[in-house]
Length: 58
Image (cartoon, rainbow, N blue to C red; front, side, top):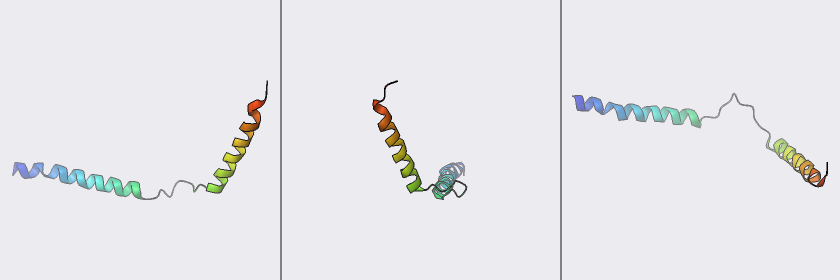
C-alpha cells in the first residue's frame, strides 16, 4: 500500500505541470494589445535620429 502512495507523487506532479502549461498557454487578456506597425514606426524614427546624431560633435 505504501508503494502505491508513492505513485501518487508523479501523478500529482504531472497534473500540476499540465495545469501550469494550460495556464501559460492561454493569452493574457489583461495585457494591452501592442500595435506592430506603431512599434515599427517608432523603431524607424529612433533609428533615423540615432543615425543622424552619430556624426555630430559636441
